[in-house]
Image 1 (cartoon, protein in one colour):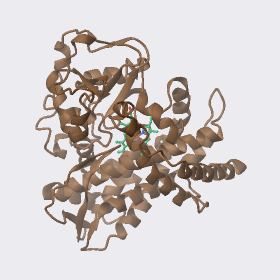
Image 2 (cartoon, helix red, strand yellow; image 1 turned 120 degrees about the vertical axis):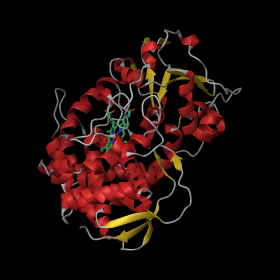
Image 3 (cartoon, protein in one colour; image 1 turned 45 degrees about the vertical axis):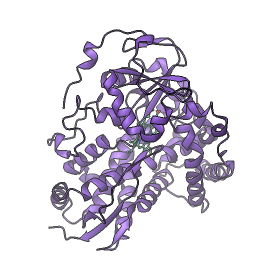
Length: 459
Ligand code: HEM
């Protein structure tokens, strides 16, 4: 791991002096470059120093290229920023859950939801995760080639449904969630895109594909029915929903409408991200026999033929290193943003209320000042002894500070159990030589995942 020295020596600058990245076009600004090859564009911005200015259409956005500055933004300066225009837009299809909530509402919901993600609860959810992952693995016939992407989506949705609702007796739930997730991706693509600000100025795009409110309405109706059933007996069913309903704070419990918003937020935050990470992990190990051999050695020793469970997690160190490296090289949340809510100075730049700031975990994680040979997938770059310690300002797949992913431990548990279940009894290889490219959307995922699973007997 390298130390980022650049910010220590960065000269104080005024806003006007922050360098504008080359390639700004009349009207469109840098939007076409972002649209054409966003990952390359954000990666190259570091050449212009710790803070670079880009224009999305007519709007300036400052991009932070230094881990120290990102850390400062997310921690000590966090109160001076909210999440920004894109998240305002997201409140329409999503409601106002933890991801979009600001200020006191965010603080209150965060405190009330935290117990649902405590270690002892995750241990309970792990049973559901392990069982669903085992079932999905069993459905992959030995010796066959599969497009794993739909399997992975199904698995992460099964796990989220199973951990949110221990007793999903309502038969309408699954189809309602699936419909909503499908529509959601279309309706939110623009809201979440870095081009959102630009699109606001382009009437054709502004009117682009208005979201169909039907699926959201149906999903909310099913959730309300489930919430009523739960409220009727007030029991803790060991699931996430019970925790949301039991949560209490100085201002009282969450209302039914607030609970519904949070459930929808969890569907959004807890499926696509995990699917992308698991897909990238399988993609990487399918191309690296050495990494896979070490994985198998570890799984054979630790599991000794048993299905993976929560109790095995502390010993699955190489598995965890593979996932740590996967989230470094392919962070699903590749671009994050904030908006100043009061005058604030950061990296020598003065921000006025309304000014927007972007930073890219993807670009930071591939910065050669921070990681040696950053483009190389190498789980061995992470320490072997004990839990993997990740540097908090240079390793940001889950963000940091008060908006740190509340589902981080949930995600590590799910990813580790799923990767172990899917690989313990098979060796995986790519089914062909076709290149796999990153698909840049609301999350970053591989555009294809065609793998062959060769049967193996754990030694
Ligand atoms: C590999 C999987 C995941 C990744 C990479 C990921 C990434 C992130 C990131 C980067 C943030 C912070 C965004 C920001 O600062 O603007 C975030 C927030 C959040 N994540 Fe995750 N996440 C993952 C899995 C999950 C899961 C499984 C859940 C829930 C079951 C979840 C729920 C949330 C919620 C509710 C927030 C908002 C937290 C707040 O603002 O207080 N995430 N996630």
